[in-house]
Image (cartoon, rainbow, N blue to C red):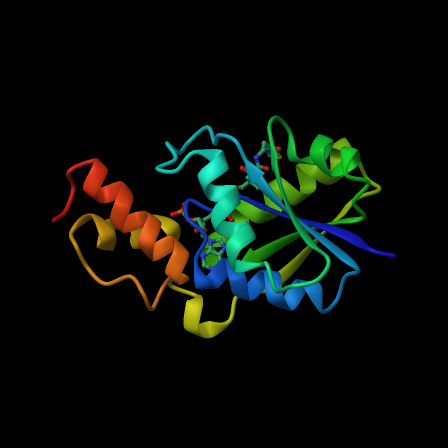
Length: 165
Ligand code: COA
């Protein structure tokens, strides 16, 4: 039985994240999507509850997936969840250095949990949540980048913030 964690900010979840989730469930027995409360370098647009709800909605038809928010170190969360593996997506060479550093640090902190990488499908390799938020901010159509629930929540959020019409 392999339990894996797929961690991230998911602010909001995109088709790129969903692609990694769907491919991960084919190779592990249980997938926990770990949603970080806050990220040092990022101010989240959505609250953790909003991010969790969007992921739950888009993964509701997938078996053996649960969505769990976490604070603190990823490796501690992975230990608490009794995970065997951390899954990360690699989009391009630019992701590599950060991911290598993170996986080696996590391995140093707890060698029992491995990090596995899935390369992002080509059609999503340019995607990021920040780019999607930028498009939404100026009223652009984000439906090709994110599931309907994320697009809807982005529209609502941008209206609340008075960012677009
Ligand atoms: N397709 C499209 N986009 C993708 C993607 C994919 N497959 N995978 C990631 N992205 C995008 C995300 O949308 C995000 O875009 P953004 O920067 O515009 O927000 C970016 O790539 C990276 O995001 P993500 O994969 O969600 O990682 P993250 O950097 O937001 O979060 C954590 C990384 C949460 C795993 C990390 O910060 C963490 O572990 N934090 C806890 C503290 C800790 O343990 N630190 C590490 C010590 S070594």
